[in-house]
Length: 384
Image (cartoon, rainbow, N blue to C red; front, side, top):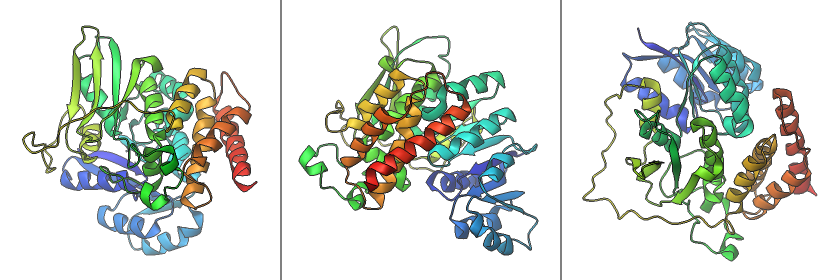
């Protein structure tokens, strides 16, 4: 029988590419549920193509539009964030792809784990905000969490067959984004249009800005800690502008295993859906005889302070990574609205981390309160 999938965030970059993978392997996968935040037009189009059991539009004001457009089809139409958290528990679902943006991915991930649904995780903020809670739940409910980020998928693939061998070090590669060689003075004047032009990857706006500020790599470091059971000092960030090596694992004998390929998110998406099997893909292949020379550099945490903040947050622990994430979401949104400069995003994050109440052993409710408080404080700094 075809595997039943729920695609949370189906209208985003990852969600749209996931549907392409499903189309290429329609004998293996079927769409049970689709969810979107605001893009009702594309959600309706996807629903007509895949005929899922249920679609959910988070923006309740767009519910009538979606409901009317699908009223002649055998599709349930729900609205609101509660509905997204509820749909993941539907009995026929085998796997939930969490491709939502930011903090919004946490609750559906928790509900999917409670319902013992395999989770394909493309939302790094879930583990940034509540990594200990989520990983403990995955163990409690004996439910797999398979990474979809290209770097974490690469590490996951490198560890296949090596689970009994302890990791000495994870080498987490970073493209460096569009500004890696700019000076601080140059960074002070970059625009959102420049920041949204990633040299290698086609991603959503928020993730692309995070890549430009290197916050994305800080989040991925935190995510790697929880996914692979390592400490922050065991993770090195390596700037590799060509994005051919997606990440590496070093073992106790000094051997390093790497996963290589052209920048293509459909590969990790497909691997998460089909693990432990690999599916045939029409994606272009890496040609070693024509690719550019591969280079490697150290990140500069003086110019890209967000990466240092991420290490500071995970070393402090508790709710500090949650504070980091909330402040970053507000700062990025402000930058995209031309309310904040590129370097000021780091100032907002640093000050918010110093002002929000610290909780050493947070519960889910503590995370929710922390997220609210951090957003409020970050927003106040922007408006004052």
